[in-house]
Length: 387
Image (cartoon, one colour):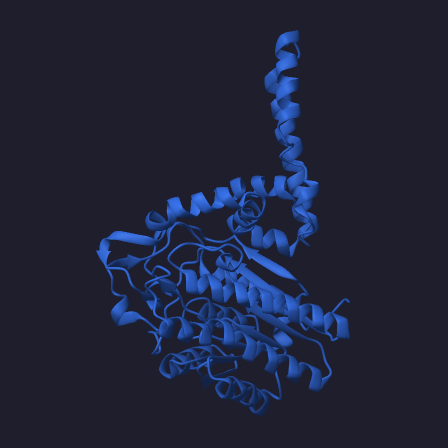
């Protein structure tokens, strides 16, 4: 069922986890686009600063202190939005934090507390948003922020992976039920890869050294762009960074290979051996984390955006661009071979060509991604992301 959503400048958008990182950037970008924003988090001081900032630039914003792990708090967010702005058009479940520690280290108490935020916060927010959209009888958008780790588990973040897997399952089930009801509610799941936010510093960590992303890292603005696109356009999934999509697909097709890969890169990719851990002071598991900071203290290759997000926003143009790139690669390949290749070399090239997949062709095993992009294109997109 086709659902038509309002443009951003006509919307009221609720954003949880808005005091830092992805939520903070999303609120700023939404307000800049003309949307009224309702920002929620546990850090009331940071929320008030954000509201003053937005209002100082001519925008409209409302701060609501809330712990999304408490259903009554989440309902209060909706009630405040209705009282101030008459309702809301998009609800973004973004609040979250992680735990770094081995499966047999992390206490049950810590695991339960994290699930209250990462999983139950999404459930509460989703149910309340859907209830509101149904009562007002107008189309609305629910945007749940998942994770690559909701598609593929990693060592040392078992609780976070489990919670995000649960978020993905909940979101998919809810979407299907609403579709069966023909309810005009768009449900989008965001799949971020490694993002430069205070995620690493707000985490509960059992490590003596500082946890951090170490590798290719995307800016929180790329996730915010995907969220706000989903607020105005019906979309099933949005992947932030081609790496998130490719690694998910690789895990689906070659799970044992991905097991070994994740085991190999866990410590060098998630823990900085040169820095002592600051997480005992900055952990936001049981208390509000510091606010008004978009970025964390990660190390690696910092991207300025995600080409793949833009390609999902414009799938037909993306397909045409990939097809053109494939034709260009093919032409260059033929030109290098030259017209006077020997019969033996032609035969070898022919055998090689038949043994390797065409990088510009979508495999039938890919399934439907909803974006018109197959596995071959994904490999090319990953290379494009490197520039």
